Length: 426
Ligand code: HAM
Image (cartoon, rainbow, N blue to C red; front, side, top):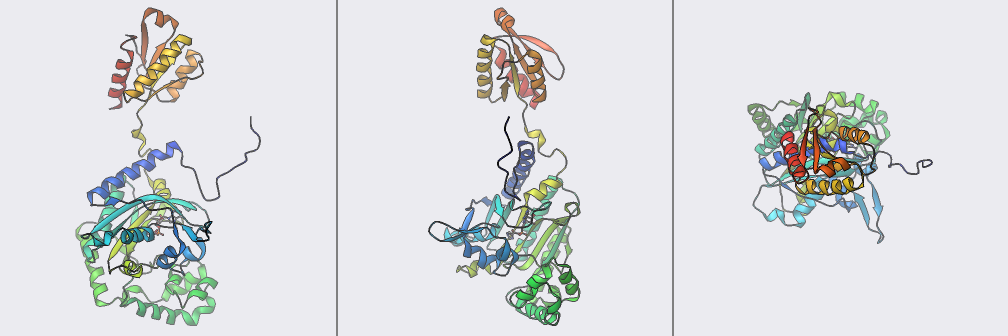
């Protein structure tokens, strides 16, 4: 059968098979429940947008925009980009649909694929999936703390152990320029030793050096000025208050004053949730505040904040078998002989119409192989029906776990099997 395989999935992109989807759905369901508790409504934004939307918000000199976007001209020559993240699109949608005119807060969540041309490795893909949310209209630290509490709560419900929450504050339009200046002053004399990328964008975006993976840059930034030392009074108070709430609410976190994040839109609070079990791609979720983003898109000054988690990374951390209990086992109809198969086919339809998953053997194999098949499918009950049973007007209903069999009449077989199966699934 077949020759050489002709097609493979594109590098860095993978299929998610049914046995993995159970865990994915479990995560999605948990987050849907948690988002509902915190007042978020779902938004579905397009997979691609005008390229400029991402370039302006994520930052022209960010790694994502410089190197990682799937950008292509459409047939009319417009430059489009597959979304590398969700925030830019949600902010656009927020304004375009006049959600900024609603009474704040406006809370939106989303789930779906994102695309970045990164070097694939464990936990890093070119198409990956995020669950994220954006929270508009509240400037106070209660919003930051609530967001972090929600993330903490959702991960707790999923039972992911050993996560670390790191937070930092990047300041705002008032204090960040001073911090940038200090960074440029610090790195300028060291520029020769920086990696090529950082050297080139030092003047435009000195914060990137703090996030650079190159060993040379890592070493050089050890003594670099820290964000915390430059926060203005308002930003300092805001950060203090966020930490205060988190402590009061029992959300453990540590301050990491070296964390700057790879997206340029952040102001004030930023955070990452990491796990030691993920290797070098250790961030499971990340986010922060972006109080200047809506305005930079031409909207009214609107504070905002949010986060996104990486599904592929999160499912690696889930306890064994998470979400596995979701599947209801089918009733298997083992039919022997032509007439029996005809009735068997009717039975599976009736069972399915009653909301009971049902299966049968399409190939008319021996009873033994049909029973093996039922077993492999995890069927709890099997209806056995051959010419002999047809003649007698009674068939056998076998309980696969107790191995007990009972006789049932042709007329009541479906009802009885459906009831037993429902009970077993409870
Ligand atoms: P981000 O840190 O770029 O933030 O991505 C969030 C999460 O997405 C990461 O922590 C990681 O788990 C996952 N992720 C990112 N890139 C990949 C990849 N190539 N393969 C697998 N997983 C990946 C954002 O995207 C912001 N939009 C978050 C946010 C929302 N900030 C405010 N609101």
